[in-house]
Image 1 (cartoon, chains in turn blue, orange):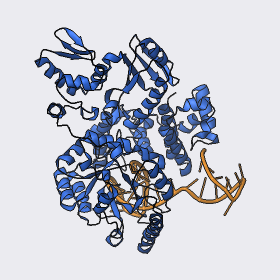
Image 2: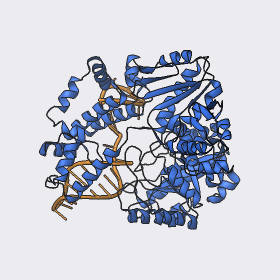
Image 3: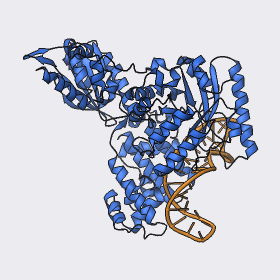
Image 4: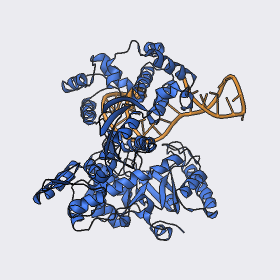
Length: 576
DNA sequence: GCCGTTTTCGGCCCGACTGTTTTCAGTCG
């Protein structure tokens, strides 16, 4: 049983409880447990076998007992009772954007909808709008949502694939026959979502390597075990493919499998003009196969510089490499600070609070070798604070940060992440914003506006003199929703005119701006900043994924503001 | 349901927004 399957079961129980109007906290508890499992890097069944289920926060005595029953018998009597009497179809359509448990229940019950296809049919027949509480618009939006779901891919997030792959690499390095090891495929190119995990090994004794690989402790099933390659399935149904080659030809292997397909096709066409042919085994010149131990030598033979995997998309990189004019892409070592950090500073916000204190985040920043750090908690919720209370909160945070600044452990910027509200106004007034060292503004609600409205909305934040950074500009969530559409010419113009910075948000599900738009921003001369949106110190390591997006967008240090040393960096903000 | 404790109960989740209402229910973050 995979984590995904367990999560689905728990979400179904939560949905059933919600429909049956059980106390809210019970519903929340099940969803929280599902969240914990969804985000757990370990296999939950494995944890259960090791009697470590209790280490997962959100799983208490009751759920532990139910999961025990689930793993032993494959079912849970209590869950069955809870879901009893409810139409099965509701669990199939629950979770589609804007369809929650109650909507799912109503539709499944009244229209006898059993699955997504049924839902599409009844919506197309116009049966939904005739239900009480539904109308033309909600029916149309359901159709759009189905369309969105059907286009969703079964790919995992880059961060997930990356972490799983790192563990496999650690295991593989234990085998003495492994001389070199790297990831291949879209993972090596650091694409935002990944299908399978591919790994390359340079070795003289592939047999040993493959035998070691198939013994990977988290492997569930060996799919294929050949002489030079093997594939295994991990317990969470993720496939890992291993390919080996001799060290003398390792560069060929390493170059071939990451692609992209278009990049390789272009290379092959170039080779063909010289009468050569390219493959994973090397470059064939007048029927003789030439081997290359490194990628650098492979590319050199083709008359070009080595191309960083992140930009191998056949979008001009080959021509640049031939002219020895590739961009000098930003690296993680260039990053000097992180400005999008949510601390546990005690404010009742309308969004999530962080888990760690200012001090803990400062210490983490030091350990990352940063020169500066910026705090950007969400603002106090508008509904529950009076004007003077909001002002008091801002003052309280400012005072606390001023004290930390005086300790001179690291350079600190005092800021907030303000909401860009539906009408384009901000969740803090200007008279408070102007006293902050910096302001990040982001959209956190009403994500379904038209292109025109969304553009206007963001432009009004760009026009605000106290706003410095626009966070996660497109609002997309990978595998979940596409962002709102924007008129990018206007956004870029606004940023340039008013000196605003676009964020490359490194949160694994966001990665927003995304690579293609980063490239556009670079072309337009718009400055960006890579930041993590961390809500806990551990998440500050995610900066890596943001840097990858920047690299995929051809960004150099000149494009990324937080590569600047403090003395230069602070000039862009209101540091006294 | 979970969790933490001032440790076996009481607090935890609520604000914003939308579409359908005409005062609210449901979704989302």
